[in-house]
Image (tube, rainbow, N blue to C red):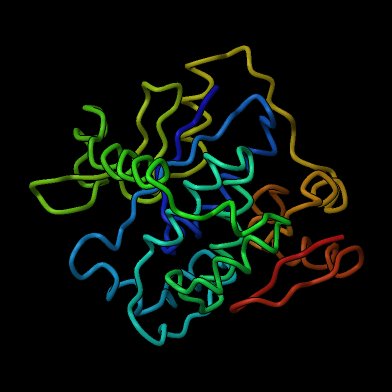
Length: 263
C-alpha cells in the first residue's frame, strides 16, 4: 500500500509525529511504501517567522529531540524541500533518509536555507551533494509537489480544521497522509486512525507485534538512530523501563532536549 506523506522538514509538528510513523513502519514494514510530497510551508507570508520562534511546547508535549530555543533568524524551507525532490529524481530511495537528516539537523537548531546544512545532511547518508543540484526537472517536480499539497482531496476539505493555508488556497498540514490514493487523513492524528484505514483498505496486510527488546528494534533500524520518544512509541512500554533498557544496550546521541539511540 502506498502512503503519500505531505510534509516539510521545517515543521516541528511533523517531526513530533514521527513516533507514530515509525510505529507504522515497524508493524507493516515493506508492505507500506512511502511517497514524500513537499509542502514548502514557508511560501506563505509569516510562516517562516512562526517557525523561527521554535517549538518548546511541542518538545515538552511529545518529547522529540527539538532544541526549544528560537532560531537565529527566519529561514525558508524551500531549498531543503528542493533537495528532497532532487534526491527523489536523481537518487531514488535516498529521499527519505535525506529528509530524516535534514529534520534532525533543523530540529537541533539549523537553518534549512543553509547550503552547508543541506550538504552535511547528504554526507550523513553517503549521498554525493551533486545529486541535489537544481535543474529544470527538479524545479518542475517541486512545483508539482507544491500544487498537490494545495489541492486536498474532498474528504480532507470536509475536515477543514485539519488543513492550513489561506482561505483562498487551503493545503494539507504537516503531516498529512493519503493512503492508496483515496483515503485522506490530514493533520496530526493518533496511530489508531492510520491503522483503522489500513485495515479497511487491505485487511490482508500482516501486522507485526511490538518488538520484544530495544536491540530488536534498533537492529531493524540500524541505519537510522531513533529518538527516545520513537522507541517508546514502538515498544509500547513505559518510558522509564525503555530508558533503563536503552542505557544497558544502546549508545545515546545527544540532540536538542533529548537524544537519539543506536546499538
